[in-house]
Length: 266
Length: 262
Image 1 (cartoon, rainbow over the protein chains, first blue to last red):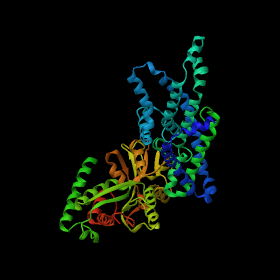
Image 2: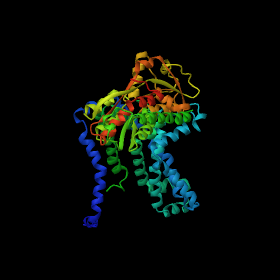
Image 3: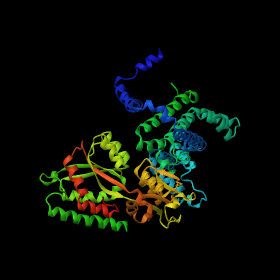
Image 4: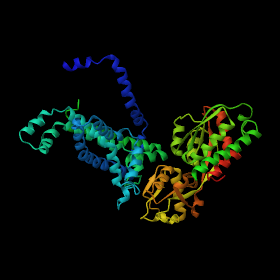
């Protein structure tokens, strides 16, 4: 009963833009599904090159997500606890973390080349090369996906009740114990949601990857890059590949969201 | 040097254009659409990325000869452009980097009598100073060098494949890029020790890269077709533009940029 009452509170005026928004998000994907070459689908998808690109995409996106968690959660903590900093410094840090979100990924790729390439600011001192390797794919994905995780976790941290942490501290827990046993469990839903966003963003990453890592089958040619190249030759095959990427992404979002983030689903 | 070229080339062509415009009424081309009625409006040209520099020069001269006309370009990979046209992009003219991509548009009955207007030849691009000591196509088999090629799905990759096959060389590429300018970028930044691009790309890059010519390039000469589109919003201007590209003045611009003539 409470549920139906809540639903009736949606103003009819909101339904029109909400419907339009949903149509804009969903209809292009419907077109993709309708236009898919269903007859050849099995043949197209059983190609070894497709399995290779999909495997590379899933593997690098998973690794990128782990790295984002290891590096991004601490960064989110620093951001969330920076309330005592001078406002200008806080705003600057926040802006710096958000930049990769608004930067065209291709620009991000060029920036990574200029830093880590063979003649890059840092890269010129390395005795190994990063571009054209799978490592470069992971670095590019971490670069573009990390902000999603940091902002999600930071939001969760700000919304969490700091009295639990204070209580734990007064009871003698060390700062590390407080973080591990109190803070992290409190923001677990935010961390999971951020990790999920991070993974799907890494899975779809194209521009920074092709610019920084290049494109070579089995090494750096992820599924989005394979899709783009296939579009040049055989649009039907490209649509089939897009479908794979879409199904994998939707599958991950639907299945993991319920399992990992009970607090956020429905 | 590139600056000098950028400054002198348009000036020279402007002179040619003005001269021709002075001699013949309207445009230098023998285009029926352009002789009597003055053409006007916008002409939208979808052109292969490798035409970027030379078509910029042609735009200036063509607009000077036809004061009422504005040329708008959409440069990109030919395959992608062909796909956009087939999907209904409002273009007047298509200039492709390969006959195959023009065929895509012609098969959809959207291209009107494609004509080949230039040829392009492959050249090896190396970073300034040639750190990998690349001397010929044989170096592309060297695993220790960072090699950039176009993917075979795009015209420059198909041409590279043809040249390498003709030479009996199994290349060891480190990356297969989505278009020729991406290969050039990797070489310019020094990430790749060598890349296979077009002669015109090396010329357009000026001092940023060095070119190494190789004999086998003759086996993979690419023809560039141009056509007005049947659903062109501005067919008169489209015909005039194509005629200008095929005219002596247009051919001179293309020759200056390193293109071969048909």
